[in-house]
Amino acid sequence: MERPIRSSRIRRTVRPAALASRTALRWGSTYLSWGQRRRAKRERFVLRTAEDVTRTMGEMKGAVMKLGQVLSLMTGMVPEEMAGQLASLQANAPPMAFSLVERVFLDEYGRPPRAIFKKFEQEPFAAASIGQVHRAELVSGERVAVKVQYPGVREAIDNDLANAGMMLGLAGMLSKGLDAGPIVQDLKDGIRGELDYVREAAHQRRFGELYAGHALIRVPRVYPELSTGRVLVQEYIEGKPFSAAAKLPPAERNRVAEIVFRFAFGSFYRHQLFNGDPHPGNYLLCADGRVGFIDYGCVAGFEMIVVERFKNLLKAIYAGDLEAWRTATERVGLLRKGAPYSTDELWEHMQWFWAPVLQDEVTFTRELAAEMVRRNAQTTGPGGQINRHLNIPAGMVFLSRINFGLAGLFAGLEARGPWRGIVAEYLYDRPPSTELGRRSAASSAGPSV
Image (cartoon, rainbow, N blue to C red):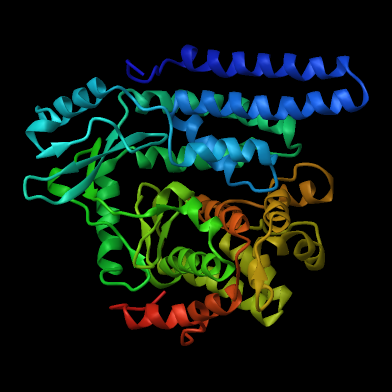
């Protein structure tokens, strides 16, 4: 890519529109065949559309590519062919030319990369929706990862958000009932915050302080003195991509999942912080057994009263008190008061949101992950009627994103664990219920996750 991201509304509308036209024509052609031949053509349609959507999202970057990352996590809601293609957006995308990287450095520092770093690799080792990452070496000899924001991405994102519904509509052709609204809102709230690398660096430093010396969790050191609003410099961590976990034995897959689970929910309940971007490109499997958490662009902080309300909701579930659960759900803001349904009707529909903690041990499967998302995305039938009385309060998009995102990730691992017991640690200040929990407690300066 030799130029900055094309950010005009017209340019960024034309490509999704052209893609939609190609997809419609391709789908229409399947009606010209019958029987086995039609089935074969429709299988090819799904694969070619998945390839086309992924390529377009990767090349456009911005919010459109972020949308592809979100879709790839919806295990069971989009076909395996599409999920597999979109998963490639989690770690890599077409990179921008090095001349554009130099332009960003000149704008931010007034100097090219070679004047700041002892070494700077021109080829990025990762390229994602907002920026790409280069290996470099400081004058002091420390190895670092340098994230550089794409020129024009800020303007492109605002226009992308207007087109996101169209891109989701293409997935809707393959997955009926997928509702673009909540996802687009999530993008608006999350991705704009990710554009400020100074803010991200501050969040990363906070997490680094909380997990310094932790036995299970590694947060790369950030260099705020070298970072700007569009360039973030952090410690380079060696590790295997999260996708490598799928090839591990079951016990090791469960171990990785428990570490990620404890980091996600322990950070919320123990430290009132939420890192809400659960896609594989943000996790590394370190050689020492730790999991590296390397991205802090999508972080939210919560007041203690909000955390306590969520604790009360879960305590009601653990106690089997559905009336208290309904009251707590209204108080949190997830359910509007006065919904014209009995508590039993609401619970039958909404219990899937908390399915992982309803039994002592639960295995994440594609079917479970799909049902969690399907219930949340229903727009028709009894479930759709109930969903009209549900709400995502301001600042809560992160919570739903992490729930469904992790369900998709863990389903890919077929991870089994005592999630109920782990959450009980946070709700009731109980001692660790697993060996990993005990290792966490032994290496935590404050409350363990």
